Length: 253
Image 1 (cartoon, rainbow, N blue to C red):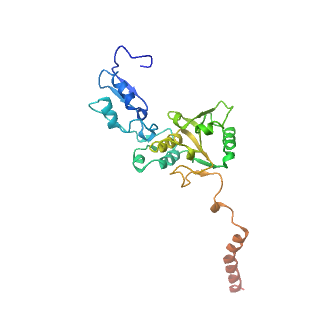
Image 2 (cartoon, helix red, strand yellow):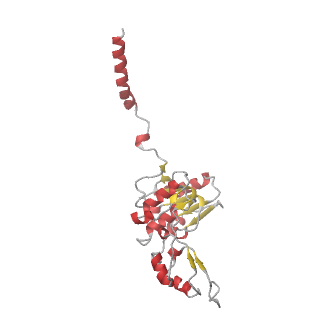
Image 3 (spheres, rainbow, N blue to C red):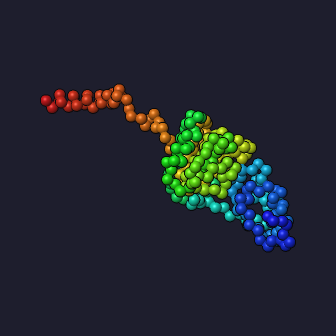
């Protein structure tokens, strides 16, 4: 099919990433299959093209299939549970119902906030310090023009190119600044967040995508609640103990 129209139709066709196929692309497939034997693989939570199909029912109709059996994969062994739980936050409530559950535990995703003029340097330092064998950096076209890596472990892609890729360390850069059609932007975020097999790091200067703003994951800067108490607080906390000791001394003199 790549080199031209085949002289004979195929008896069985397998289609991967079916959620990103357009009606026209499925029409071509239908015209090159001799029967009803088609295997389709896809995840509509990863649908990133506005013009692509929206459901298995639509695919069945476009391919002219008399019957379509759908088997849902409910477990994910590739992506750590902590990452999948975070990624699901960018989906709608209905989409979360079909999101897979993570089986294996891993590291909490990291959030690194930096000034807008320091984002590039932050990403460069993360790459330099990383000990993973392969690093995937996902950034939009504007940000990619500012990033450059001599490290041959690094693959850098646009959010629309991230599907099907995976790496031990994934760095997602300024996801809140990405633009796309309203019904596919959250899916671009979901795809980007689920590319890791190990560690996920999100670097941003502005607001995070909706769903990630509740500060899940691990942040570099400690929150106020985790900082050491001031001297004044420490002295005040000792007063009840000192008062109790004075009363005990008087009683047992």
